[in-house]
Length: 358
Image (cartoon, rainbow, N blue to C red; front, side):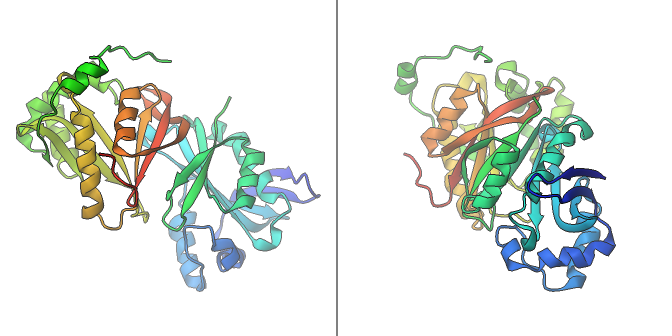
């Protein structure tokens, strides 16, 4: 158990894992509309439903702690840890019983977490928190505890209209490729672009860009084994909910994918894309992204927000997004792992209500 004395009072704050016997204390804030107003979950009215949530979600969670005063839970704080390329970051969440608001308890709890989470979780380099723009009290908590905020992110959570992003971390690449001038790029005609699902027979075209260091510099290690690429197409690409080949004359020259956010957040998805080097500078990627954006909001009617992340050094990709109509929302520090190194990325978004740029 980790403790800290509240700077506003003599309250002793401690964090510990939940136990099922905490259900009555948990119910105090979980059944309070004032508390759930800015939460992604609905107010609990049934103790059995809450007990089920604790058994299935809270207790198995890798990092979900009770905020205690005098050993009794008065709130909760959690860190949802990323995996894969997102393993360097975690998302902070917290909630506190309304009778304990305004006493500095959550600020103390957040400071406790930030003080040891980087040592406790191997590989963690960034903790972020999302707050509704109207939730001023929570923003002040994070400003005091993290001392860092980014621009608002639009419609990031299903129940909130707009959020602010805060982050903390524990204590320029140059573009290696000089491409054609802007004038030459504008003078070239954009070929007819089509998007279609991948097929097994696309493996050779896939290898043309996937084995190219220039294309893969912002994605990961180049593919060198055709059999491994074939297994990737069969096992990952073809079952994917929305992964399309960018085709010129029906021949794949790149890809664009849209991945729904895992869990209950069906209103948000993330876009990724890439293009064979020989087709750079011809407006193909821009045309493909515009097609994907125009299509996905029709195919997924519940989708409200499409996100895209680019490395801060990848200025060409950022221009593609800006020309499509995506809004730049800010730089997320140490947000993703690329080739074993945590990297800063630029976050962009496009809402279902945003106008397409033509």
